[in-house]
Structure formats: C-alpha cells, structure tokens
Amino acid sequence: MALSSLPITVCLLARAIVAEIEIARSARPLCCLATGAGDKMTLMSRKPSDEAPASRLAEVRAGRIEKLGRLRELGIDPYPARFDGREPIAEARARGEDAGVRVAGRLVLWRRHGGSTFANLRDQSGTVQLHFRRDVVGTDEYEVLKLLDVGDFVGVEGPLFTTKTGELTVKVEKLTVLTKALRPLPEKWHGLTDPETRVRKRHLAFIDDPDEMQMLVRRATFMRSIRSFLDGEGFIEVSTPVFEAVTGGADAEPFTTHHNALDADFYLRISLELAHKRLIVGGFERIYEIG
Image 1: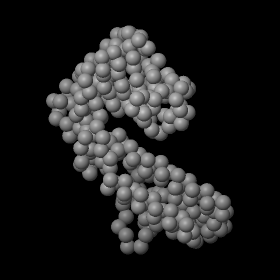
Image 2: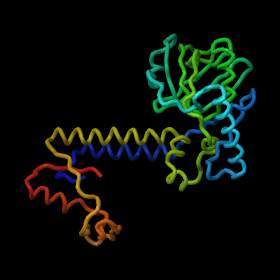
Image 3: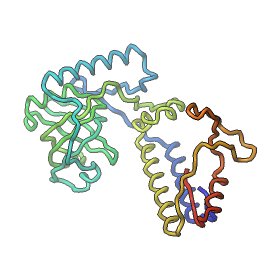
Image 4: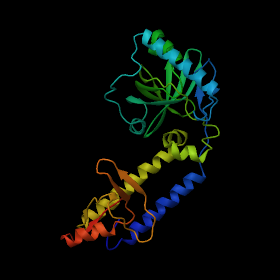
C-alpha cells in the first residue's frame, strides 16, 4: 500500500492482528471426531488423505462410493443444486430454545444410541448439535443415516431444545442430503502435523482448525476497515500492473516469466513506486493500493 502517511491507530490494529494470529497458531485446540459406523461412537482415523496409507484410503473411498450408490437407489439425489431458506448456525443458536430453524453444514461428529442418533453440524459461523429420533423423522429417513459419514454435508429442519447437559440442540424433523463426501477428513486427534501440508493444502488446514479459517475473516474485516478509512480521507484505490515489462525495485532479484502470445519476458512487480508516481504525474493527488 502506497500513501503519504498511515495513522498510528491503523498500525496498532495491524500489529494486534498479527499478534492474535501468532497466539492462535501456538495454541490450537484439540478435539476428536467420530464416524457413523456401528452403534457406538468410534474415533475416526481422520488422517490427511496424502499421509494415509493408500490401501486404507482406497478402502474408505470404496465404502463411501457404495453408500453413494445406495442413496441413488433410494431415489435420493446426493448432490442437489439448492437448499434455499437456510440461516447461519450462529444466528439460529442466537434465537434460542423452541425456535424452528433450517440450517446446513458439514457433519463433524456422529454417534448412535439405538433408536437415537446425535451429530454435530458445522458451517462457517459455528457448530450445533443435531438429534435424530426414529419416531420423529420416520423409519425410512432414519435408515438413511446409516449411509452418512463424517464429512458429508446435510441440511436439517426442526425446533431447538436444550439437553440435560445444557447443549442447545436441533430436534431434526426433516433431513436433506446435500453432498456425499468420498474422501475422509484430515485426522483431528493429532492434527495436521506436516507444516508443508498445512501451507500447500489450506482447505485441509481450515477443516482441521476452524480458527485458521477465522484468520481470513479477520483479515477481510481489517482490509475493509483500511479501505473505509482511506476512502473517507479522499484517497482513490488504484490497481497497477502485476507484471511489468521493465523491472523495478532497486537491486532485488525479480521473478521472470514469458508471455507466449506477445513473445516477451515480463517481471513480477517488486515496488509499486514507479506506477504510482506516473499516476501522480497524471494528476491524481491521493492514491493507495493494497496488494
């Protein structure tokens, strides 16, 4: 970002964001997930797909593909295009007990107890417990639960109630299968321990630790605040070329690439200074660029 001056408050906010991210990385919470296999709660071997033994991964995938086929045999579309009218889980929880809700998300916990099944459903905003009863959803729909696994996406409808342990729970009256996952989720008990996997496959890191996903949310909020402040001060946001025909940035070694259509070499920009100076020469007085 190029501008003449940056307020101290914005700098302090940036430092606070960085500090919060570092704390989150050093203190990741541990929790466990369960599979839907059998009548008892079992810990799931949620090991990252690329680290799991190939034979085990193939076995799990084959089992899920079989369940996918059985869903289709029952006339259930495992990948419907829409699930309209849903609300974020956080907003549904805020409405409190007895409120009728319609929420959707990923199953991250699954345990059976005879004619009753509990699950945890997670979306971007939060997590809520689900309670399925055979006499409520019906025998046919309850049997569909046997074809679901941790990692699948579902939509549910029903009223909220509080369990004896004080957990706000959805008493599911209607279940909609939204996505049948064919691969297991990352192992949660020990987490994604390979730093390179966490960096190269960010989607797995977000599943492993939702706090990392919230870092992007906080970053978006931070960037929006910067834009709002600068726009209010009369600055104009500009976008200058990412690749340049002439390299800038003093003695820094540039990244070089070749443009096949133009048959010319280009350089990844290092400094925004030259492009911004040209804009100022052209008549702009207050400009900024983020990126």
